[in-house]
Image (cartoon, rainbow over all chains, first blue to last red; front, side, top):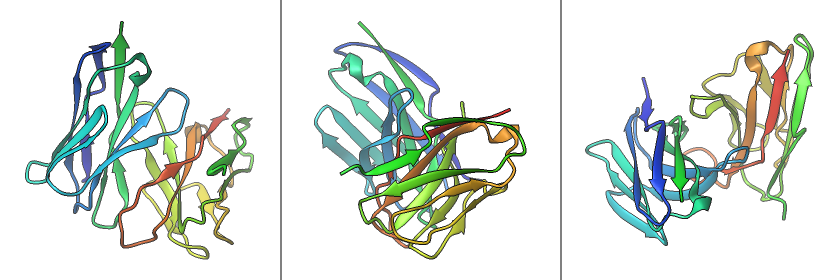
Length: 109
Length: 115
């Protein structure tokens, strides 16, 4: 079967750095997405990786290793507004997105 | 530009009743999707449409039906609601259709409770 694993919950301090990991086992791979979802709101797009390596976008970076079935989302200079759930999703061989359950990130002052 | 709108925002429904969740996008995207989101689970695809006039089944299609009469609208119907269909329902769209990975954009969701 297809599987996406992420930690359920993480806690970090305002101003610090946090890394959210995602491992996947899917039938085929056509890219990996990270979305942010604030409580009670819709998921919003953060990043997309299809090749190995690091993609940097402001305070957020996303890394992919296809050989290891592994990605991480790195958030720097954490702000209180970064408190949210972070969803990892993989595009499979049929170009359908397989979603992880999400990681709830709690930021403490 | 509104993006994607969904209606209603929330609904409490008696079991056995028929219900249609509405979804409209103004981005002229080819593909549209319906997901449900339950606590502790990832988003699960119910049905999708790669282009107007076509629909397909996702991971959890039982008890749901969809239609895609035009590019903008993609309603989801529960023919006879059951309590296990209590969930938050998200509609999404993407520019490309089948055969390509593309970013999906989500509507604000409908919170449905079936009693």
